[in-house]
Image (cartoon, rainbow, N blue to C red; front, side, top):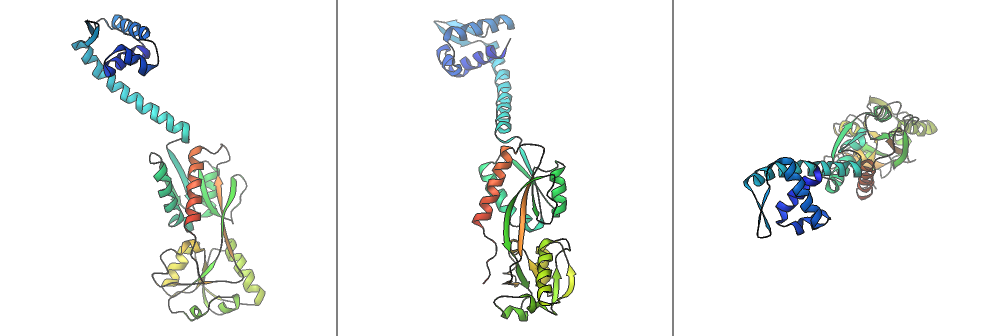
Length: 300
């Protein structure tokens, strides 16, 4: 008993005739008839009665068909699984991201990706940029989004975005009267800083040093979103990645451009030990679409 014989039996049961079964299988009618005869000989009982040139399923044939049909449902699932693997490499894409994208850009990208690929699950973890780099390099994640302060050796990478930072101000802060904030405006002002290793913080410090400005450091945090939350509470002012500002303007935080521009750059990171699977390329396409259709906070 082989799969071709079983398939011939199922095709006849579904279509009702040998000729239609042959069309379904793409073989000749004699080949279908021969497969049925061989299967009956193998089983030891008749599957059909021959009545006036027609095949009528026997009770044994009907009983056997129930199990055969259930088995083919399983085969159909296997074919679908094989198609997903062929098209996407796996049924899951694992993404690690810095916090700035974790609550803004990535949720939009996941929605876009799921609209096109509903059978693929997405694992999203938010962590520091250094941890993103390490987990992608170790093969724990397929794709990473990290700020530019990381060591890019050992991972494939490409520049993903570069946006000028903006200053987050508490509601009612005196500097909100300015259209643009410059380094000297922050001299003596309570200041929320990003982590010491953050490249944007280093660029901002260079701008301070160039004019002799000395803000009053009150808090350090690795996340621009936390800077916004602290500004909302009146703790101080801080330079942030504009992608982290979603929702804070409506809650009262004031945002102003900063000159000279201090860019926040981010990179896409890929596992170095394997060619990018289609599933990863599809997710990158969703990320780029989300980035292009939802620009960061615009301030004037």
